Amino acid sequence: MVISAQETKTDRKKFAEVDETIAWTMKMPSGVTCSCTTTYAFNGINRFKAFGEKGWFGLEPAYNYRGIKGATSKGPIDRENIDQFAVEMDAFAKCILEDRDSTVPGEEGLRDLICVEAIYESIRTGRHVELPRG
Image (cartoon, rainbow, N blue to C red; front, side, top):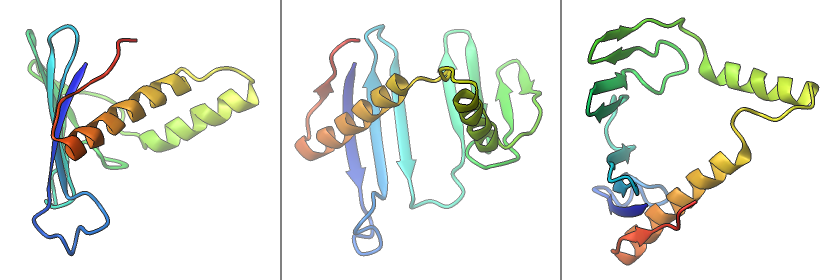
């Protein structure tokens, strides 16, 4: 995977200690390219959308505790409206109580953090960062 990232700060005082806007691309070994942006600068951007060869899917709003709505190129996603964070905490607690592994192992989080570090390295160096396979 290759990651390339840039950071934008339009208000250096307001965003002195946090990132304002980061845009990055991730090119996967398969050739799939992800174009991503995260920002604290624009109130109300609360969506996610993914495009593929056979259609698209997305969430809007995407990051609320409740009221998440999904759609695909074939129509709306009809799911029960839940507090996904509460469900996640319940699942973690159940793993502890039942002494079993989580369906989302720590290695998943580690891979996420490696990507985040590569994003920051790309911002610092102005270069693409290639991550090892695996």
